[in-house]
Length: 253
Image (cartoon, rainbow, N blue to C red; front, side, top):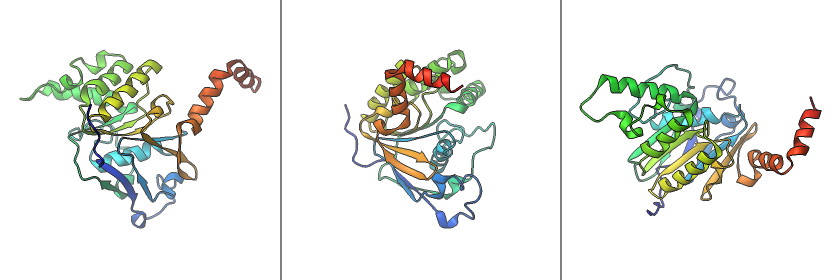
């Protein structure tokens, strides 16, 4: 197994606060952005967690677009767009790059993965001198597989190592067993000198030991541990006290 470089591809980000015209409008009025100065990333795995509405996807998208990825996902070679709804936050994000450049990279967005799969088929139909794009995803049309199968096909076949992988809620459509398999795949790629930035609600995916977890709150960003996240606490309480939790939930109706 490879040994991870002490350096990293993306050391962190800085928000150019002085260039922002106003913090009164979206997305700059989000508590997370209003309080953001800098955010340092772990050389292996960094997690962005928190409740919906805190700005996780907005922040992830801005990092990916600032790096050069397509807002709807894919590699830096994809330029398709089905809707221009991404914010301007990326214009004010300053990347703090490491000394090394990745050989690979991918921005995974669960919500727009269907559009990515469609674009791959369109490009392959147009033809080129090189191999089909779908061959690097396992060779089988992503539309001819279930959501879970097509998601996992990208993680398994397309991610080659020595890459920067930005994943926005990759657990979507993945069973708990597949989430554990993905955690194993993340470890395999980390051993191949890869770096991950992952937004997730899954306590399973948050469990990678050599990592940092950032929790997004209405007041800003805090560092936390897996066991201190609401995702872990609530899931554990429910599984350990299912009958009591169901009774309390139904009594409140």
